[in-house]
Image (tube, rainbow, N blue to C red):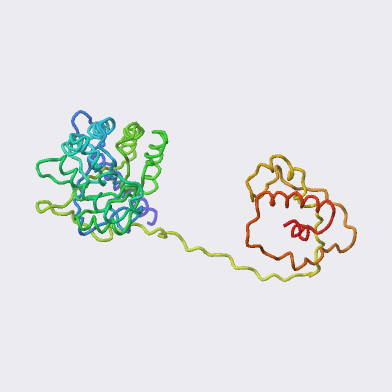
Length: 397
Protein backbone atom coordinates (compact mmCIF):
# COMPACT_ATOMS: atom_id res chain seq x y z
CA UNK A 1 0.00 0.00 0.00
CA UNK A 2 2.78 2.41 0.95
CA UNK A 3 4.65 1.48 -2.22
CA UNK A 4 1.64 2.36 -4.36
CA UNK A 5 1.33 5.75 -2.66
CA UNK A 6 4.98 6.52 -3.33
CA UNK A 7 4.54 5.66 -7.00
CA UNK A 8 1.48 7.92 -7.17
CA UNK A 9 3.39 10.80 -5.61
CA UNK A 10 6.25 10.39 -8.07
CA UNK A 11 3.87 10.36 -11.04
CA UNK A 12 2.18 13.54 -9.80
CA UNK A 13 5.57 15.26 -9.39
CA UNK A 14 6.54 14.35 -12.93
CA UNK A 15 3.25 15.72 -14.23
CA UNK A 16 3.83 19.00 -12.38
CA UNK A 17 7.38 19.29 -13.75
CA UNK A 18 6.19 18.59 -17.29
CA UNK A 19 3.44 21.18 -16.98
CA UNK A 20 5.97 23.71 -15.70
CA UNK A 21 8.31 23.03 -18.59
CA UNK A 22 5.40 23.32 -21.02
CA UNK A 23 4.36 26.63 -19.48
CA UNK A 24 7.92 27.91 -19.73
CA UNK A 25 8.15 26.85 -23.38
CA UNK A 26 4.82 28.55 -24.09
CA UNK A 27 5.99 31.79 -22.47
CA UNK A 28 9.24 31.72 -24.44
CA UNK A 29 7.30 31.02 -27.64
CA UNK A 30 5.11 34.02 -26.93
CA UNK A 31 8.20 36.19 -26.40
CA UNK A 32 9.74 34.96 -29.63
CA UNK A 33 6.53 35.69 -31.50
CA UNK A 34 6.73 39.29 -30.27
CA UNK A 35 10.23 39.76 -31.76
CA UNK A 36 10.02 40.05 -35.56
CA UNK A 37 12.90 38.48 -37.43
CA UNK A 38 14.21 36.49 -34.46
CA UNK A 39 12.01 33.59 -33.36
CA UNK A 40 14.70 32.54 -30.86
CA UNK A 41 14.93 35.96 -29.17
CA UNK A 42 15.32 36.38 -25.43
CA UNK A 43 12.63 39.07 -25.34
CA UNK A 44 11.27 41.04 -22.41
CA UNK A 45 9.09 38.96 -20.12
CA UNK A 46 7.28 41.76 -18.27
CA UNK A 47 7.26 45.43 -17.29
CA UNK A 48 7.69 46.38 -13.65
CA UNK A 49 6.19 49.74 -12.64
CA UNK A 50 7.74 51.28 -9.50
CA UNK A 51 6.98 54.34 -7.38
CA UNK A 52 10.25 56.10 -6.44
CA UNK A 53 8.64 57.76 -3.45
CA UNK A 54 7.79 54.45 -1.83
CA UNK A 55 11.23 52.91 -2.42
CA UNK A 56 13.77 55.76 -2.75
CA UNK A 57 16.95 53.62 -2.68
CA UNK A 58 17.43 50.23 -4.31
CA UNK A 59 20.28 47.85 -5.09
CA UNK A 60 21.59 45.01 -2.94
CA UNK A 61 25.19 46.14 -3.36
CA UNK A 62 24.52 49.10 -1.07
CA UNK A 63 20.95 49.27 0.17
CA UNK A 64 18.46 47.30 2.24
CA UNK A 65 15.99 47.19 -0.67
CA UNK A 66 16.20 46.11 -4.28
CA UNK A 67 13.70 45.51 -7.08
CA UNK A 68 11.01 42.90 -6.34
CA UNK A 69 12.16 40.34 -8.88
CA UNK A 70 11.23 36.69 -9.00
CA UNK A 71 13.86 33.98 -9.32
CA UNK A 72 15.46 34.06 -12.76
CA UNK A 73 14.49 37.68 -13.54
CA UNK A 74 17.14 40.20 -14.64
CA UNK A 75 17.09 43.97 -15.12
CA UNK A 76 19.73 45.29 -17.53
CA UNK A 77 21.20 48.74 -16.85
CA UNK A 78 23.82 50.70 -18.81
CA UNK A 79 25.83 53.70 -17.56
CA UNK A 80 27.79 56.65 -19.00
CA UNK A 81 26.30 57.06 -22.51
CA UNK A 82 25.36 58.05 -25.00
CA UNK A 83 28.56 57.51 -26.98
CA UNK A 84 27.56 56.86 -30.62
CA UNK A 85 30.44 54.54 -31.48
CA UNK A 86 29.38 51.98 -28.87
CA UNK A 87 25.92 53.03 -27.64
CA UNK A 88 24.41 52.57 -31.10
CA UNK A 89 25.78 49.02 -31.27
CA UNK A 90 24.36 48.27 -27.82
CA UNK A 91 20.94 49.47 -29.00
CA UNK A 92 21.17 47.28 -32.10
CA UNK A 93 22.05 44.19 -30.05
CA UNK A 94 19.18 44.80 -27.62
CA UNK A 95 16.77 45.37 -30.52
CA UNK A 96 17.80 42.12 -32.16
CA UNK A 97 16.76 40.30 -28.96
CA UNK A 98 13.72 42.54 -28.25
CA UNK A 99 15.21 43.32 -24.84
CA UNK A 100 14.44 46.53 -22.93
CA UNK A 101 16.88 48.13 -20.51
CA UNK A 102 17.48 51.22 -18.38
CA UNK A 103 20.15 53.74 -19.47
CA UNK A 104 21.72 56.12 -16.95
CA UNK A 105 22.95 58.89 -19.23
CA UNK A 106 25.54 61.60 -18.53
CA UNK A 107 24.42 65.17 -19.18
CA UNK A 108 27.58 66.22 -20.97
CA UNK A 109 27.31 63.18 -23.25
CA UNK A 110 23.71 64.10 -23.99
CA UNK A 111 24.67 67.64 -24.92
CA UNK A 112 27.30 66.31 -27.33
CA UNK A 113 24.92 63.73 -28.80
CA UNK A 114 21.25 64.62 -28.19
CA UNK A 115 20.18 62.32 -31.01
CA UNK A 116 21.61 59.39 -29.03
CA UNK A 117 19.32 60.21 -26.10
CA UNK A 118 16.29 60.20 -28.38
CA UNK A 119 17.40 56.88 -29.89
CA UNK A 120 17.33 55.32 -26.44
CA UNK A 121 13.83 56.66 -25.80
CA UNK A 122 12.47 55.80 -29.26
CA UNK A 123 13.71 52.22 -28.88
CA UNK A 124 11.45 51.87 -25.85
CA UNK A 125 14.16 51.87 -23.19
CA UNK A 126 14.01 53.81 -19.92
CA UNK A 127 16.03 57.05 -19.96
CA UNK A 128 17.53 57.86 -16.54
CA UNK A 129 20.26 60.25 -15.32
CA UNK A 130 23.86 59.91 -14.14
CA UNK A 131 24.92 63.52 -13.26
CA UNK A 132 26.20 66.19 -15.62
CA UNK A 133 29.93 65.41 -15.71
CA UNK A 134 30.35 62.03 -13.99
CA UNK A 135 32.75 63.44 -11.35
CA UNK A 136 35.01 60.95 -9.60
CA UNK A 137 34.63 60.77 -5.83
CA UNK A 138 31.26 62.46 -5.85
CA UNK A 139 30.74 61.58 -2.19
CA UNK A 140 33.65 63.92 -1.36
CA UNK A 141 32.29 66.96 -3.21
CA UNK A 142 30.68 69.95 -1.45
CA UNK A 143 26.91 69.65 -1.31
CA UNK A 144 26.53 72.65 -3.61
CA UNK A 145 28.52 70.87 -6.31
CA UNK A 146 26.53 67.67 -5.75
CA UNK A 147 23.26 69.50 -6.25
CA UNK A 148 24.61 71.21 -9.36
CA UNK A 149 25.71 67.89 -10.89
CA UNK A 150 22.32 66.26 -10.31
CA UNK A 151 20.24 69.26 -11.43
CA UNK A 152 22.27 70.00 -14.55
CA UNK A 153 22.29 66.34 -15.52
CA UNK A 154 18.50 66.20 -15.40
CA UNK A 155 18.24 69.47 -17.33
CA UNK A 156 20.65 68.30 -20.06
CA UNK A 157 18.80 65.01 -20.59
CA UNK A 158 15.46 66.82 -20.63
CA UNK A 159 16.74 69.27 -23.25
CA UNK A 160 18.01 66.42 -25.43
CA UNK A 161 14.65 64.63 -25.25
CA UNK A 162 12.80 67.80 -26.26
CA UNK A 163 9.04 68.48 -26.28
CA UNK A 164 9.12 69.12 -22.55
CA UNK A 165 9.79 65.43 -21.87
CA UNK A 166 11.62 64.62 -18.66
CA UNK A 167 13.74 61.55 -18.02
CA UNK A 168 12.53 58.86 -15.66
CA UNK A 169 13.04 59.78 -11.99
CA UNK A 170 15.80 57.18 -11.68
CA UNK A 171 19.32 58.29 -10.70
CA UNK A 172 22.59 56.43 -10.23
CA UNK A 173 25.59 57.92 -8.45
CA UNK A 174 28.81 57.84 -10.54
CA UNK A 175 31.02 55.03 -9.34
CA UNK A 176 28.29 54.14 -6.82
CA UNK A 177 30.03 56.62 -4.49
CA UNK A 178 26.94 57.14 -2.38
CA UNK A 179 26.56 59.69 0.42
CA UNK A 180 23.64 60.88 2.50
CA UNK A 181 23.67 64.35 0.96
CA UNK A 182 23.55 62.93 -2.57
CA UNK A 183 20.64 60.65 -1.74
CA UNK A 184 18.72 63.39 0.06
CA UNK A 185 18.99 65.79 -2.88
CA UNK A 186 17.98 63.09 -5.35
CA UNK A 187 14.94 62.35 -3.19
CA UNK A 188 14.06 66.05 -3.13
CA UNK A 189 13.93 65.89 -6.93
CA UNK A 190 11.59 62.90 -6.71
CA UNK A 191 14.28 60.54 -8.00
CA UNK A 192 14.89 56.95 -6.98
CA UNK A 193 18.59 56.22 -6.35
CA UNK A 194 19.73 53.03 -8.08
CA UNK A 195 22.71 50.99 -7.06
CA UNK A 196 22.96 47.46 -8.50
CA UNK A 197 22.77 43.86 -7.40
CA UNK A 198 25.93 42.80 -9.23
CA UNK A 199 28.32 44.31 -11.81
CA UNK A 200 30.11 42.69 -14.73
CA UNK A 201 33.34 44.68 -14.17
CA UNK A 202 33.25 45.91 -17.77
CA UNK A 203 34.79 49.26 -16.79
CA UNK A 204 38.00 47.45 -15.89
CA UNK A 205 40.71 46.73 -18.50
CA UNK A 206 39.62 43.13 -19.03
CA UNK A 207 38.69 41.05 -22.08
CA UNK A 208 35.13 40.72 -23.36
CA UNK A 209 35.21 37.03 -22.46
CA UNK A 210 36.03 38.01 -18.88
CA UNK A 211 33.05 40.41 -18.83
CA UNK A 212 30.81 37.55 -19.96
CA UNK A 213 32.24 35.14 -17.38
CA UNK A 214 31.88 37.59 -14.49
CA UNK A 215 28.32 38.55 -15.46
CA UNK A 216 27.11 34.95 -15.69
CA UNK A 217 28.99 33.76 -12.62
CA UNK A 218 27.49 36.49 -10.43
CA UNK A 219 24.05 36.03 -11.93
CA UNK A 220 24.20 32.31 -11.23
CA UNK A 221 25.32 32.99 -7.65
CA UNK A 222 22.45 35.39 -6.98
CA UNK A 223 19.80 33.90 -9.26
CA UNK A 224 18.27 37.26 -10.22
CA UNK A 225 18.91 40.99 -9.98
CA UNK A 226 20.02 44.29 -11.45
CA UNK A 227 23.04 43.89 -13.72
CA UNK A 228 25.36 46.89 -14.07
CA UNK A 229 26.97 47.40 -17.52
CA UNK A 230 28.39 50.34 -19.51
CA UNK A 231 27.41 51.28 -23.06
CA UNK A 232 30.65 53.18 -23.74
CA UNK A 233 32.99 50.16 -23.73
CA UNK A 234 34.03 48.06 -26.71
CA UNK A 235 34.35 45.02 -24.45
CA UNK A 236 30.70 45.39 -23.44
CA UNK A 237 29.60 45.51 -27.07
CA UNK A 238 31.54 42.30 -27.71
CA UNK A 239 30.29 40.51 -24.59
CA UNK A 240 26.61 41.49 -24.68
CA UNK A 241 25.42 39.08 -27.45
CA UNK A 242 26.93 36.12 -25.62
CA UNK A 243 25.48 37.26 -22.29
CA UNK A 244 21.97 37.53 -23.75
CA UNK A 245 22.29 34.20 -25.57
CA UNK A 246 23.43 32.46 -22.39
CA UNK A 247 20.63 34.04 -20.37
CA UNK A 248 18.14 32.59 -22.82
CA UNK A 249 19.83 29.18 -22.72
CA UNK A 250 19.72 29.09 -18.90
CA UNK A 251 16.12 30.22 -18.65
CA UNK A 252 16.58 33.76 -17.36
CA UNK A 253 13.95 36.40 -18.14
CA UNK A 254 14.37 40.14 -18.75
CA UNK A 255 12.26 42.66 -16.82
CA UNK A 256 11.82 46.25 -17.97
CA UNK A 257 11.42 48.87 -15.22
CA UNK A 258 9.44 52.10 -15.70
CA UNK A 259 8.26 54.75 -13.21
CA UNK A 260 4.68 55.04 -12.01
CA UNK A 261 2.69 58.00 -13.30
CA UNK A 262 -0.81 59.39 -12.84
CA UNK A 263 -1.96 57.17 -15.69
CA UNK A 264 0.19 54.13 -14.83
CA UNK A 265 -0.15 52.62 -11.37
CA UNK A 266 2.73 50.89 -9.63
CA UNK A 267 2.89 47.12 -9.84
CA UNK A 268 1.32 45.53 -6.77
CA UNK A 269 4.04 44.08 -4.52
CA UNK A 270 4.60 43.04 -0.91
CA UNK A 271 7.16 44.78 1.35
CA UNK A 272 9.21 41.60 1.79
CA UNK A 273 9.72 41.35 -1.96
CA UNK A 274 11.83 44.51 -1.84
CA UNK A 275 14.06 43.48 1.03
CA UNK A 276 17.56 42.38 0.16
CA UNK A 277 18.92 39.22 1.64
CA UNK A 278 20.91 39.85 4.81
CA UNK A 279 24.65 39.26 4.55
CA UNK A 280 24.30 36.85 7.44
CA UNK A 281 21.22 35.03 6.15
CA UNK A 282 21.58 31.26 6.04
CA UNK A 283 25.05 31.58 7.51
CA UNK A 284 25.60 29.85 10.81
CA UNK A 285 27.04 31.99 13.57
CA UNK A 286 30.73 31.30 14.06
CA UNK A 287 31.64 29.05 16.95
CA UNK A 288 35.13 29.92 18.07
CA UNK A 289 37.05 27.09 19.75
CA UNK A 290 37.59 27.47 23.47
CA UNK A 291 41.15 27.82 24.69
CA UNK A 292 42.01 24.54 26.44
CA UNK A 293 43.35 24.42 29.95
CA UNK A 294 46.72 22.73 29.63
CA UNK A 295 48.24 20.65 32.40
CA UNK A 296 51.99 20.57 32.09
CA UNK A 297 53.63 17.29 32.95
CA UNK A 298 57.01 18.95 33.43
CA UNK A 299 58.08 22.50 34.17
CA UNK A 300 61.74 22.17 33.29
CA UNK A 301 63.15 25.02 31.19
CA UNK A 302 64.36 24.28 27.69
CA UNK A 303 67.93 25.23 26.82
CA UNK A 304 68.37 28.58 25.12
CA UNK A 305 69.01 28.53 21.36
CA UNK A 306 72.48 29.08 20.01
CA UNK A 307 73.16 32.30 18.21
CA UNK A 308 74.39 30.29 15.25
CA UNK A 309 70.89 28.86 14.95
CA UNK A 310 69.56 32.24 13.78
CA UNK A 311 69.68 33.41 10.18
CA UNK A 312 70.61 36.95 11.28
CA UNK A 313 74.26 36.09 10.81
CA UNK A 314 73.86 34.51 7.35
CA UNK A 315 76.16 35.76 4.65
CA UNK A 316 73.30 37.09 2.54
CA UNK A 317 72.50 39.63 5.28
CA UNK A 318 75.53 41.67 4.29
CA UNK A 319 75.24 41.04 0.55
CA UNK A 320 74.84 43.74 -2.09
CA UNK A 321 71.14 42.81 -2.47
CA UNK A 322 70.51 43.68 1.15
CA UNK A 323 72.40 46.94 0.79
CA UNK A 324 69.87 48.08 -1.84
CA UNK A 325 66.76 47.14 0.19
CA UNK A 326 64.48 49.98 1.42
CA UNK A 327 65.44 51.64 4.66
CA UNK A 328 63.98 49.90 7.66
CA UNK A 329 62.75 46.91 5.60
CA UNK A 330 62.82 43.52 7.24
CA UNK A 331 65.29 41.29 5.34
CA UNK A 332 64.10 37.87 4.23
CA UNK A 333 66.28 34.85 3.50
CA UNK A 334 66.64 33.60 -0.06
CA UNK A 335 65.73 30.13 1.13
CA UNK A 336 64.29 28.68 4.28
CA UNK A 337 66.82 28.82 7.17
CA UNK A 338 65.96 25.28 8.27
CA UNK A 339 66.95 22.52 8.83
CA UNK A 340 70.19 23.63 10.44
CA UNK A 341 73.22 21.93 11.84
CA UNK A 342 72.95 22.63 15.56
CA UNK A 343 76.20 22.23 17.50
CA UNK A 344 76.03 20.09 20.61
CA UNK A 345 75.28 21.84 23.88
CA UNK A 346 78.32 22.62 25.95
CA UNK A 347 76.47 22.36 29.25
CA UNK A 348 73.25 20.92 30.50
CA UNK A 349 71.88 24.45 30.81
CA UNK A 350 72.89 27.17 28.37
CA UNK A 351 70.94 30.23 29.47
CA UNK A 352 71.19 33.75 28.02
CA UNK A 353 72.42 36.49 30.32
CA UNK A 354 69.89 38.82 31.89
CA UNK A 355 69.47 41.88 29.62
CA UNK A 356 70.64 45.21 30.95
CA UNK A 357 68.04 47.94 31.64
CA UNK A 358 69.46 50.01 28.76
CA UNK A 359 68.16 47.39 26.33
CA UNK A 360 64.62 48.69 26.85
CA UNK A 361 65.40 52.34 26.18
CA UNK A 362 63.42 54.10 23.43
CA UNK A 363 64.55 57.08 21.42
CA UNK A 364 62.15 59.72 20.09
CA UNK A 365 64.07 60.42 16.91
CA UNK A 366 63.88 57.89 14.08
CA UNK A 367 67.13 56.28 13.13
CA UNK A 368 68.57 57.12 9.70
CA UNK A 369 68.68 54.36 7.09
CA UNK A 370 72.46 53.98 7.32
CA UNK A 371 72.25 53.30 11.03
CA UNK A 372 69.80 50.46 10.34
CA UNK A 373 72.25 48.79 7.96
CA UNK A 374 75.07 49.39 10.41
CA UNK A 375 73.04 47.72 13.10
CA UNK A 376 72.45 44.74 10.83
CA UNK A 377 76.14 44.38 10.07
CA UNK A 378 76.98 44.78 13.73
CA UNK A 379 74.52 42.01 14.50
CA UNK A 380 76.49 39.63 12.30
CA UNK A 381 79.76 40.55 13.95
CA UNK A 382 78.33 40.16 17.42
CA UNK A 383 76.75 36.84 16.55
CA UNK A 384 80.06 35.50 15.36
CA UNK A 385 81.82 36.70 18.47
CA UNK A 386 79.33 34.97 20.74
CA UNK A 387 78.56 38.09 22.82
CA UNK A 388 74.92 39.01 23.64
CA UNK A 389 73.27 40.49 20.54
CA UNK A 390 70.76 42.79 22.23
CA UNK A 391 73.39 44.52 24.37
CA UNK A 392 75.60 45.13 21.36
CA UNK A 393 72.73 46.55 19.30
CA UNK A 394 72.02 49.17 21.95
CA UNK A 395 75.65 50.23 21.85
CA UNK A 396 75.47 50.65 18.06
CA UNK A 397 72.39 52.84 18.34
